[in-house]
Length: 244
Image 1 (cartoon, rainbow, N blue to C red):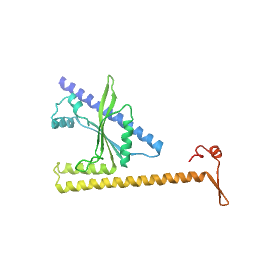
Image 2: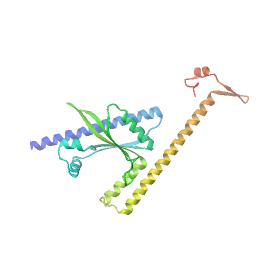
Image 3: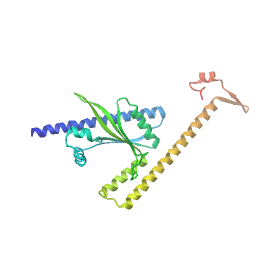
Image 4: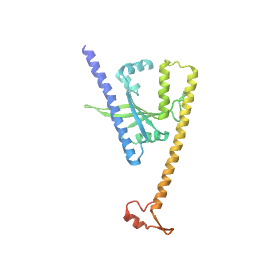
C-alpha cells in the first residue's frame, strides 16, 4: 500500500511538471499575441489549444515504441506529453510566430519539422517544434519539452477531418477515401496560397492609401494651385506630420 501511494505521488508530481511547462508557455504566447496586436494593429494568432497526454497514453506509447517503462525512459523518449497548437490565418504568420519563439532567450528549440515545405505523403501540413521550457519547482529547476504545432485554419480543418475519418475506420481507410483526402489537402494548400496573395495585395493597397493621404495633408490647394506646407510648420501642428 505504501509503494502504491508513493508511486501515485511520483506520477502526479511528474505530470504536474508538464502541466506547469504548458501553462508557462501558453502565457508566453498570449503575451506575444497581445504585444503584436498593440504594435502592429494585427493579430497573427487566431486561437490556441493545449493538450496533456494521460499517463495511460504515455505508457501505451512506450510499449508501442519498445521503450522501458520508467520515468527516465519517459523523459528521454516521449517529447509530446505537453502540446500546444497555434492556429493562424496565413502561412506567413506561421513562420512569423516561429521567429518570435526562436528569439525568446528562456526557450530552447531543439527540434523543427517543417511539414509545410515538406508535406507528409497523405497531404498533412504543419510546422512542428519541440521547445524546452524552464519550470521552477519548489526545490529545483526542470527543463521540460513542449510540442508546438503551428498551422493555418485550412490545415487545421483538414487535419481534424483526417483524424476523425481514421478514428471511424480504425486506421483502415479505403484507398478511395485516402485519395480524396490527399486531394482535399492539396485544395487546402491552394486556398492558403490564394488567401496569402489577397492578404499581401490588400496590405499594399492600404500602404499606398496611407502614403497618398500623408502627402495630401502636406499641401494646400488655393484657387486650383497646390502649395507645399513647410516641414517646420507641420512639426508645430503635430508629431509626424512632416514625415512621409
